[in-house]
Each structure stands twice: as C-alpha cells, then as structure tokens.
Length: 446
Image 1 (cartoon, rainbow, N blue to C red):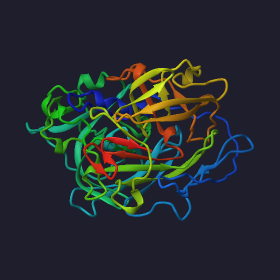
Image 2: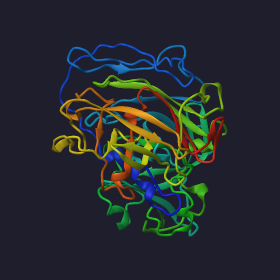
Image 3: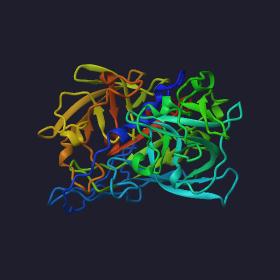
Image 4: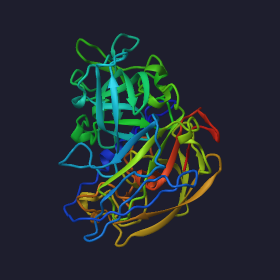
C-alpha cells in the first residue's frame, strides 16, 4: 500500500491508501453457514494442509482455517488472519492481520504485544497507531537536532507521526533498533500544510482500520535514497521539540528511514511468503493462514516450480495485459482489499461507488508479465459487491475501479492485484538485491 519513490520522493506514498479509500461497508444481511474443507497446493506440489469453508443455506459461509500435519511450522512462521479487525462497529473486509511485539531498544521487559497489525506486501516498514502504543520509544533526530517526523500520504487523507526506534519481534524472528513510524502522536500536532492538504487525518484506529501496518514489500526502506538528498521530499520533516513546528528535511541516512523489519532479521531476511487457503465465491467469515519469513533459508521456505516475475527496482511493478491493454504499473498487494483496475463493468450504488456490481458473476482472464519476460495467464472473478453479507470479511470476488486521484499513479496503466489474488496461493515476495536459489530480487513468485 505505501509507495514512496526510490529516487526522488514522494511517489511511493500512495499504496497505503487503498484500504483507506476503498473500504467496503459491511452490509446488513445475515445467515448461517456450514463448514467444509479442501487442501491448497503448495510450491512442492503437495497439500499445505489449509482448509476452507463453503456456504450453504442462506448463502453465507463460515471460516477458512489452517489444519493438517503439513502446515508450516518453525520460528520463522507467523499466523495471519483475515477478519473484521479492531473495530466492531466498522469491521474490515479483505484485510490481513498479524501480531507484532515491540520493545524499547535493548529491553526485554519494556515491551508490548499488539494484534490487528495489517500485513502489507505493498509497503515497507512498521507503523503503529499512537493510541494503542503503551510503551515509550526513543525518537529519531535529524542532522539539525529536530525530531524526524513522517507524512504518509493517502488518496483520501494522510497519517502523520514521528519516527521512533524499537526492537521488533514477529513470531520467533527479531530485529533490533528498527526505525518505525508512530502514527497520530499528540506530541506533534502541527502538521505542515503540504501534508494536511492531502485530506483528513487518518491517525486513529477507527480511521486507519488497524492498530498498525507491517510493510513487508520488495524494498528495504519506505523512501530510499531520494529522501537522503532531496530536502522538500514531502515525506520526511524535522520538528523542533520546543514548538513542534515542522519543516521539510532530508533523512541523515537510509539507516533511520522507516525500514522493512525483515531486512534486519539476523537470518530469514531476504523475503516473505504469504500462504492462504482458498475461499468460496460467496466469501468467508474468517480466514487463517501463514506468513513465512525468508526464501530458501529453511526447509519450510524452499523455492519450487512457481512462476517468477521480476519487478522494476523503482516501484516494484510488472505488466498486466488485460482487455488488449498493457498495464505497466501493476503489482501484488495484500494491503489492497480488492482487485482494482479500470473497466466498463457496472459500478455499484453510491455507498459502494468505487466497487463493481455486475448483474452476474464474471469470469475474466489477464496475463501477468514480469520484467524478466516471463508470462502467466491468470483467471479471476468479479462479483457483485452489494451481495456481500454482514458476516463476510473475506471476499475473493471483490473488485473495483482504480482511483484516478492517487498521487504518482496512472489509473489507465494500473492493475492492483490485492488480497483476493492471494486466496488459495503460496506467494513469494523477494526483496531488492537479495538472492535465493532461483534468482535475485526484487521479484514475486507464485
């Protein structure tokens, strides 16, 4: 989701907006479902042991879960879940969550475990909402002595908060002194106009839809070298402690930019694998899966015969060929709650105006092409978003139009393969410059 430019900020900032601007309200229907199960084929051709549910009766479904002896295990495996998230009044849909523990650097007691952290393969770095953070973390400073604060841009707003340092643990993996963003800190109330002008603040759990976001995409830092050389980068600011007045600044070094924690793990640090079960077309109330750290570093994360699509080293994009068009700014993104692309498919009513509502389910096909020339045909389905019932949080046919307002993007050349793409798959994300048995990142594979 977050997407800051690698060379001159700020164009990589827009991806975090997708769930914020395209959140689907839960509709008021109901019903019971019955549970069945099926396996998902892993990269080795065997069953992963994941199970899924199919609906019956009133047409709603139960939960999709993980089970079976072949389920991945080990210190590099974290559980992930698709559910309604932290808000009972405005539950999320197609949002993938995990649990993260943060500690004051060097401490084993001044720690906090936080659930409902969104897993996002389209962004880079850990961001935590200040209202849920109960421990104090040291703040990063700029070369002029001010506090380093970041503006994260959305299509419909922004998030603002300082960069702090924390030890980060996810399952059995740990990273020390990781730069993270603390969103919505009350200590920095004066938001620069070029940040606040992006729309309303999304600095609360209710507005953000999660307690934070864990960006595990193909880059190490959220902005890259551009923010170390360009002062007016519209991403990073220096705020004085006396008045909290803030002005644009370069980041003293890449080492203090908000950083993908995976890159700072001692081992299993070259990428991540997301493994989710299939979900029936009518959706599921809950989906359980796995996030596996590292690729070809352990017996449980080996490369196999999956298709490898290399992506460009500026934005992490590949090409999708759809309806005779080459959509050159395409990407995989667990942080997007649907498949988003421009189409003549009928849009929903005003409350779901960004989503598609065809009169009947549509079976479509697109071709995904990597920078390496590899191509793979991808069938997908688009359903009527208005038929989703209020107990569904995982919807594999949810799709919508890509917003033309996203800064730094061109809707006419974009296909966003969001979380529905991940259902029933094992998807690899390998970080730029890192090597595996089958290639060098950045690449995605499935």
